[in-house]
Length: 469
Ligand SMILES: Cc1cc2nc3c(=O)[nH]c(=O)nc-3n(C[C@H](O)[C@H](O)[C@H](O)COP(=O)(O)O)c2cc1C
Ligand code: FES
Image 1 (spheres, rainbow, N blue to C red):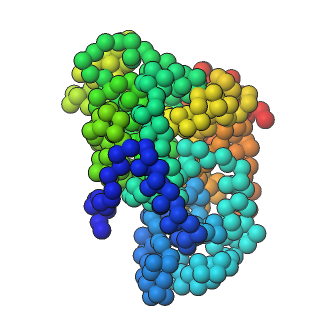
Image 2 (tube, rainbow, N blue to C red):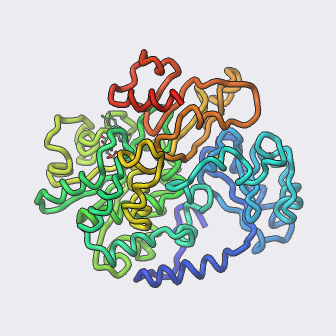
Image 3 (cartoon, helix red, strand yellow):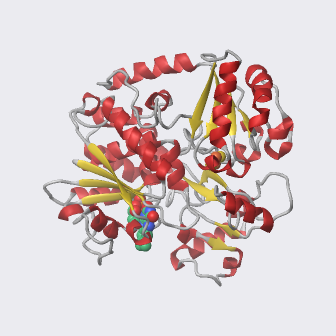
């Protein structure tokens, strides 16, 4: 099957159908051996060859049907690319090389034995996910499925519980109840401004219009940021689910995902996710038998930074030049084609199913205690060396400058940056040079401790507090 083909499967016409399919899939997956190969950023360092060799060696060993080789999103330890996780043992191997794959299959996949050279810090005591400090100190919420599912197989997402919250919201909750729940959660936008999501939705609903629109901002223009990309590439169905719930809450008739064309894998995965969801009755007419209908369209942006700004994005979606206009009126009042429009960031939408699952009050209790209830929840962060990333040219520069390593992690919002950076694998000593929070304007250099650099005034007190610890 090619990347763009949609696997057919049963149409899901109610939350009960969804739950029973989930149970069947979970029973079939119980205890299976799987090799989860990161097939996004790690492609730059040979992940495709690694995955192909795993497949051919599994076939050569007569293990087809016994061992699954799965393409996944980022496992977080990008500096150890190409990364693979071996289930059911949860063994993490980095720096995988084609010539060693027969050993990995015979020793680790079949017997659960650890090969030290591929382990985190080349230390056999840190072979399993739970033993690796980088994972042990994270609480994965929006990233919970990234690296664990094949982003191009809707059944993987369903098996992990994706779309269950949409089923609950669309069939048991009124749109206003969802808005109240999101307000109670105190969820704030992850796109930079931190505006309370529930309040924005309420304002939108107070404005009459012929139609309402929902836009997912996946432009992610901030240099060095790749949180939205990691989510779209690794778990596109959770973003779709968040959008479906949000669109229902504001009674939107149409949704858009505006994603930059420089994210080809994200574009491919989200497009395929939309096709699969449509095919299975989770998008389009009468979603899950609820009577609510929504379609979502992907639009590719040309990569202009300004198009991440909401009014410029709307202009670009309307086919105009991507230029910001003065506000008010805000898009929630006058947006796409003059109609009330909600724009939220990818990560904001990915939080919505969790809120519906847990209830807004419980969501509010997530995150760092100092920031609750003002800014609850998790935020996932890219972390890279001064010039890190998944581009091989960057890797070379990174080695030369001995900069700390690139990774993506998910921690309670408000976690001291200094503590987040302390969990690097053994290696040459390093000190904090740059930490980048959720967005570029949270970027902070060492000297910012003294307020000498241009951190936005709004963020200074918070960032100073984080760095002081
Ligand atoms: C110049 C500029 C660039 C922006 N780029 C982005 C972006 O890449 N992604 C994003 O989500 N928000 C970006 N924003 C913020 C958006 O205008 C908007 O506030 C945000 O998408 C709202 O979503 P949220 O409430 O979920 O944060 C940018 C704002 C400005 C002024
Ligand atoms: S682990 Fe492969 S890109 Fe992060």
